[in-house]
Length: 401
Image (tube, rainbow, N blue to C red):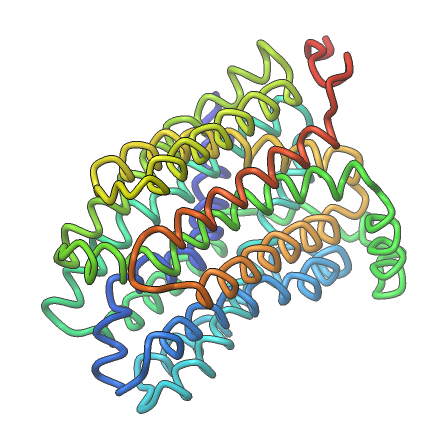
């Protein structure tokens, strides 16, 4: 693997991680934010939900813009807006102001979510794209491991507002890396003919592509299951199980380790078995694991070790689902890669935000509603995989030479 290949993966991974970094680092602060700003659990969760919504729907605009003007300029604009939102969040006097600035911050983060996937498609397809995507996921996944641990230490020593100053500093670093380590991957000659009109035509085309939508939805409900965990885990592990913010961060990071470890096998397994077979096996394993966890907890078992162990296994399977479905969905849409990536990201976050909102309605301080929500998302993802991939020969064919 060439140094250039690794350098691109690191830069794209860090750009993609800016948004999740602003989520994962902030999670241990949710209870203390509620106390400090005199806000209820629902209002504090709204500051998380609004970030997801703006980060998701912002991609609808920024993706086509990157097809029209190139990849780097929209990334610069997104990082600048992210910094403004971060500074505002750090200085927010009320929960309403925090929610407003988190909305701006999410809009800025949308560029880092949509455009790196388009850059991967600019550069590679097939198994090479899967390898680059898995490396990107490796760097990207550093966030859910290090961010909660770092966040908990910052919160305990400097308060929750320092978290937002820190993520603003991370955006400054990302801007420097973008300027010095990444070349434009969509040259001017490839932008000819790209406009908002062609973007709308592209969206219409993609919305009629059942294969694209099916693959996006498989990953979307997988991601939604993790969003349900994101929105509830700090309240459950800290308030229900009595963990400190630091210990909570360790438990949160364990799932990220499983996700990262398995995602790095994507390239190897795809070469050996084919992308579609990897998706099918991974989704089946994920749904099965989550159904087992739900069944155990439905009998009245309320044990943190049981829940943590099965979530670890389940999120390991999920680590194979996300990069493979992303590569498959983008495979045939290189000419509108920015638009396709934008629609993919928006649908992912829309599904995730909807799942978070529903889970919030049923939240009662115990882990059972969270586990039920995660299981439902996993089962829906499995059903979508069965419809999209089927049991046809195509779903299990070996990769083409």
